[in-house]
Length: 128
Image (cartoon, rainbow, N blue to C red; front, side):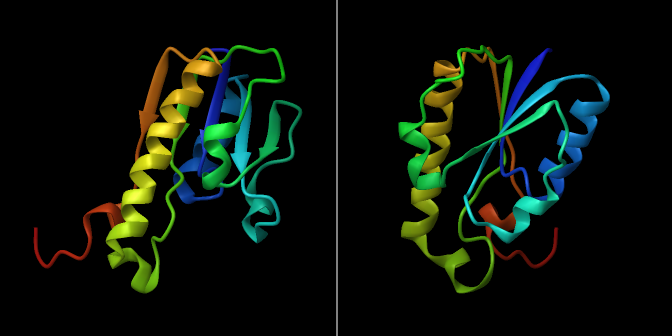
């Protein structure tokens, strides 16, 4: 793998993955929300490029960089904290955003799509 794209790069998994990819000399394109305080967690490194967009804007992102990528990692998810975790409409929007990410992966030439999340998608569980 030479190039990867990541959404949700400011979360624990995304940040760790960026560091791992850098160590393996993989070029990383990060889609991140402009103005997010958490963007400071994205490593400043020559192999890391930021492209600003919100989840709502994902569907309109174009590959204007002229590069093809290998893998798309989709970790972004809206409404993981507080009462919005139980907002069915908000969570259904996240499904749409994930489908948008699949379409973007194709536009950027990715042959592999990996989507992952936390327990937030499943709601509160008592027990195993």
